[in-house]
Length: 124
Image 1: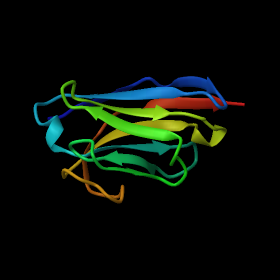
Image 2: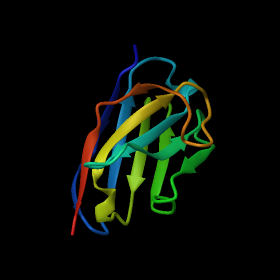
Image 3: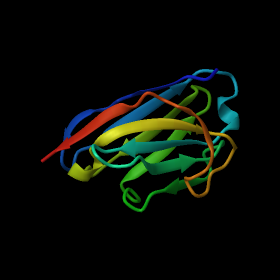
């Protein structure tokens, strides 16, 4: 069983930055693509970013491209989401996911594990 534990969420002003972390249990972390999704109040869950097993391939939702950066440290079993130039519409619960495969080029690939989520609130 794999557990994903997010941290780093909080309250930030418009234009500010946050870095989310997701620590994964298990010894096969480096074999899988990882990603982030988010869900705002009253809205459907949406894809944010995905990262291949090695970190060499990334894919972003248009809404965050140029502002968010996904990365990973396989030695630490951790994936990160650096969020810059935050906007009120970025307010959401952010979820870390593990994809079933080593790559995900579209964001909408099969996932097999989800974290519990961390709240990000951007105030104006």
